[in-house]
Image 1 (cartoon, rainbow, N blue to C red):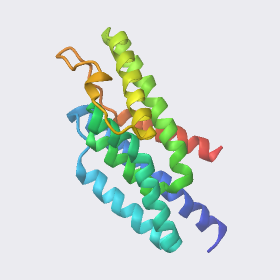
Image 2: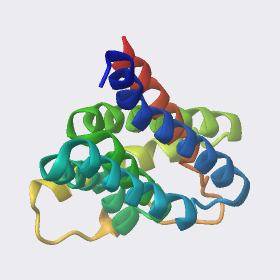
Image 3: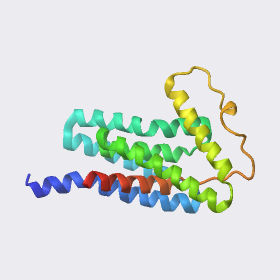
Length: 186
């Protein structure tokens, strides 16, 4: 392959995850869901691309990255009421980007999510409650990772009420992926 072909091939995963996360973000804002019709084909496509471009070793790296990048979102889904679509989208992104790039994406998405939550809460006048939930969710992730055997989310998270601010996380995922892509280019 020529160097131009190599550059195009290495840019393809970023282009695909940026486009897919943009579509997911728009749907999440409009309908409060990230549908399986986006996440499942994206995940399968990432695995196939990894196998095609790097063989079995790349496929294993792709699967590992999927698990790594989705794990915090799975924990938040199970323990703190996060979205399952968020976790599946992050796993699919990991399938496309592999281990090294997924770590950067995970950090950028988490930071984007916190910033977006603070902005939304400030606009809606629920900043103290949202900050409390952010700290509690972060604590849950750390406690879960530490291996504590018995977790009861009611001891860590404030009870949900009807005034709770729900925020679609798709835009934060999209923003984090774009930031990570720029970081990767620079």
